[in-house]
Length: 202
Length: 202
Image (cartoon, rainbow over all chains, first blue to last red; front, side, top):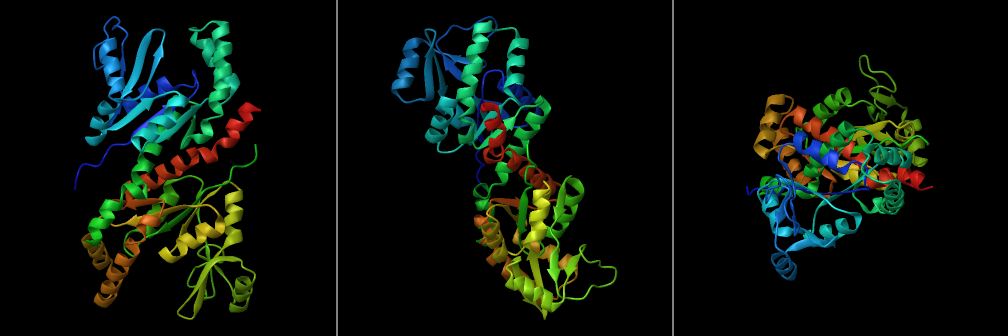
């Protein structure tokens, strides 16, 4: 039997909903799960290594990859390009590795469409009040930034219904357990098991 | 917030694939899960109690219920009627209880259609050889019966692709863990979480 393709998990949600924390905990808790590495034209900071935090590219190399259609999506933010390289993800999936990908609500549907598959998961806070408290507690944003993030959150929450799953992040443990269950359940989807049935009927 | 409806799990699979064992283990392992009780016109045996093993009905009462459309499905087997009472299942689901229902491949799609919802799961053996060994080890069937069951199994396996999920029963623990994951993942389906999102946006 040939290697079963890994699962692609596409994660979105408002800033402060806990995507990063859930990702980090999931990578520790779930065997065979890796995170997709983005490409960027910004310079490495501190101990950042090429291929670990990011694939660091020159602007010329990045633009060449855009032309060649090598990104599932890309964006320019504050003078620097950021993109999701398709080949990197496909290579891992082909090896049977499950890949998790954090992306904004605009990018998620686009990536699922371009890949032709993928499990889209929206991470929601338990309430807007809780979201605001988390943003305040984080102490990284000004009051104005928090107001903006809260406004964006409402726009993003309206997209939640377009995702396959919604994980309400009450606690990190519960959210990671939900993610683990989704991954396990998706492996049981009949589409992912037709081969073993067909082999039995041959 | 009103009580969230429980999930209806519709389980099928060839004789010997392990449906009964998985059901029994799942009822012990998964909190808030109950099994649907069938109705029958056969007489109670030994310590069987009405409403526990079966709802025991007179033939007149059973036929009246057929006329009233009270069964999701029913069949006559060796002079006795057996049926799945809809009200019994709906009452449990309305209380937020998850309900598991064992049914043959003919009945599964019919029940999901009549209910308008339900998670269909096909329990498959790891191989036909393993299935045959299990049937032999069970020591309840004659060689002819086993041959017939193996023939039926092939017909049933062809229906597996029409189910939402396929659980390959390698060990009871793994199969119950798969079932638990499916139940948890289904609770995260966006359709089942739109209410919490809508409440946040109000």
